[in-house]
Structure formats: C-alpha cells, structure tokens
Length: 74
Image (cartoon, rainbow, N blue to C red):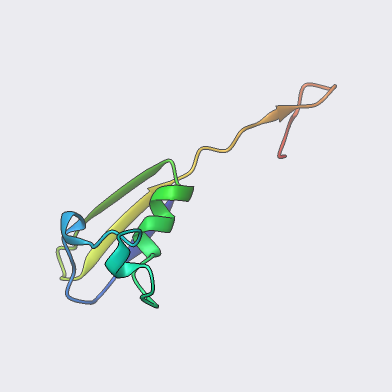
C-alpha cells in the first residue's frame, strides 16, 4: 500500500483529462493518474483535510510457495 499526501490545491478525479484523448496525446504531462490506474489494483483519491490531495494505492502481489513450504517473492 502506498499513501501519498499532496499540499497543492487538490483535484477531482472525475475532472482529470483522459491522456489517450486525441487532444492530449502530445502533451508532456498528465499521465500520472493514468499510470497509477494501469499498474495498481486499487486507487483512491480524495481531498486532504489539510488541503491538497490524498492518494491511496494498493497492489496485490502474488506469492510463490517453495518446496519447503515457505513463501518466496517472485
């Protein structure tokens, strides 16, 4: 789990432009939320009580069991 607090102005997730829309393809910014959605299993964005944004991301990692029954990372 990753928890990020931002001190900026904050934003509404529904108002973030689609980076794959034709008018946004050549922009040099605006792909962070897109990448977070692509690589994480869960993404929650809300306004922080102190202002700015609060992002909570989670990634579920698979576990491999070795011959002796201990879990091993991939």
